[in-house]
Image (cartoon, rainbow, N blue to C red):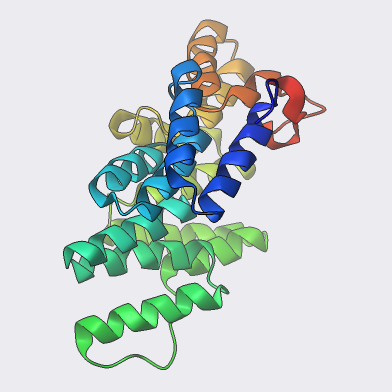
Length: 250
């Protein structure tokens, strides 16, 4: 490991350690990052993966749950939680988390195979095909800019499962994209009452408050956002997302 390295490069180095089964090193380096950036989501995600690979399932579950409290649709954490719950013998919970991963990546054949296998373990027979859920449909509509269809699917699902913060987050995002700022703010604030460190609702409220000349409130949320995602500090009109910020910023 170099003495000086960008934060994103450091995370990639740790990912490589996990891939090479150097899990104790990966755990140590992840925790080292967290001493300086104690809320950094990417560090928690890779720490969870390393703990899972080390078969420290209870510790991994704690970390993945922390990631999901900030990113309720986090693919890696849902797959990890599915593996943990299956190890515990809780097949219903294992399936629930794998279904959430499927909604994020419905075309992923490995996830489809895992879901079929889990259904087979629980029900005694594997289904020939995995049907799209409403959550998966809503995400497909969103990606295709079919926002009203996505909203319809999301509302129908949330009427039956009001605790689906992953879908509430998607709904708030679509409201903002379609200019429905009041509904976006209401939905985002509802999420933040239950998940105060949820990344996307914080971004949404930061933007809405900044545009409403409520700079003090926006500043407080922006500081929390920077703790969860340090690169967000350098976003601008030219680099509107933290992913587009130069990795050498940290």
